[in-house]
Length: 159
Image (cartoon, rainbow, N blue to C red; front, side, top):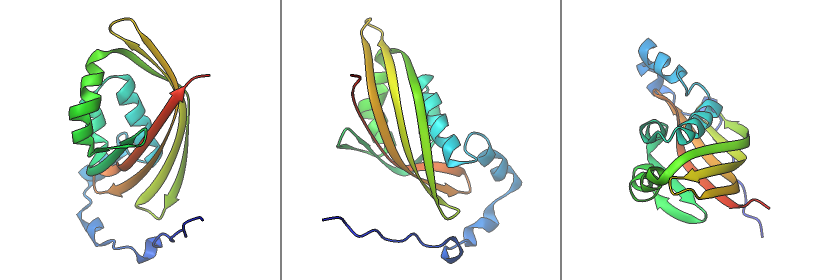
């Protein structure tokens, strides 16, 4: 049995009172790498390829929830501390191959993303990991630009 889908709140019905706080400086910050939900996801992928934990962290909302391969990992900060951060230390290079992104906007402040890709990881000990993956995400827009609010990724061997 399929769950009934709920409709998104139309943009005109959403609370826009916080927009008065947008300053030209905030608008400029939002335009750098996070002007669109696509750019936020591309920036995350680039930060991962660059093994740049600080850049990745800036792209996630404080309350973001990460799910990887069916396991809830907590907030991005928690996920980075116990999972991704230690992994990055063992990675020599990380490369995405043939990435795709599909974005569905829900009004002005929410978007859902679907990504597919292959990736190749070279570890410092010489091992190579090649997998095919996909990710779904929920992104929100606020005065700081687009941030990732939910991120679920999974992968399987390339075959």
